[in-house]
Length: 208
Image: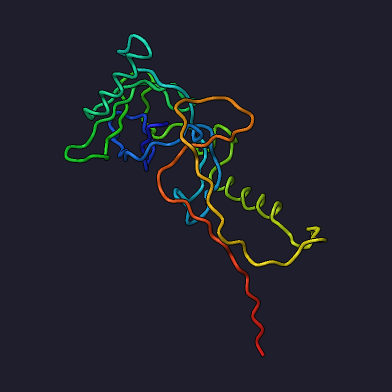
């Protein structure tokens, strides 16, 4: 899982700029490479691009295990120090949890050779697709139109009219003690919550 913060104004390369960073829920690792248009009504609705990507390291860490220990401790204590190696953002950064707040932090640049006075580095384009959010949204709309379902193109010969199915049970993930590899299985994360099946009926109204 990915530890995640939302930074509304983005990171700044100016150490004088302290940017609000709001702690959010952990995200699946798939978000490392995800960009696209999330439909309205869905969680996180809007256009998401991969603005930057890279790695981080903890300057004081002896090895990876020590780095993870320092980051976990820093998150609990409300103070994180790390070095970013991104395509746009590089250098030392600090995160400090605001007093009396659980999820609100301040993100600011450390002093090093990557300091700048222009605020947000780079441009608004994705490092994955090279598109801006507006361009990605327009392309998503165009793709949706191209790949939309046209009933006139479907071969419905042999189809029988029938009522909507009822009594269908949602598929549930089965817990396993450890990962395994088997072509006969499909894997997914077992999220907590409720599963439901919905049906959509289309009614034709005739006005006389």
